[in-house]
Image 1 (cartoon, rainbow, N blue to C red):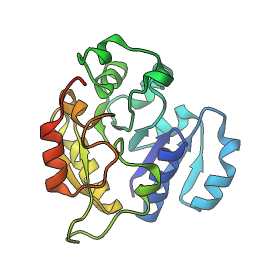
Image 2: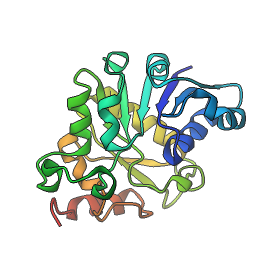
Image 3: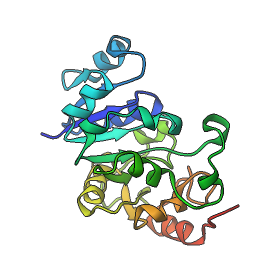
Length: 213
């Protein structure tokens, strides 16, 4: 079975870990404070979960979720993430991250910044426009009427395919935004951000998004 490495054990990372173990994945999860601080979460997750350092989580993961503040991506273990599918959950909060001119001007996206930091990794956007609590409570079986949809974006077809499969396992339909350069459509402040929507509604919200406020 696939091992999912998770770098960042906050609200999103912990919820993704719960979904992963519920669907039979092994999980190796890390935070910035050390593996020993994750004992409670690992105990909750059960035998499929292990706490580790960020480097060890990256090395262990067949696929790795990066869910750390944007200002911390320069601390990621680049060599251990080389060539791997990496799921990017990030959003830009200037209140937390400071102003980043290229983002403020709409010249790039958070996922493209991560791609620049991890040049040989295969980045796909995932779980960035849903409240953490909804990840484990708002999913439903495939074919359910009005099933909630989530967006992904990526330049690597295999990475996008993994997100699509993982979303389905978590109980969500997928709408593919396109390339990483189009992932701004699902970033903070756009119509698709943190609202419940089915695939048709999400597609419409992506289409009407404006690059700049």
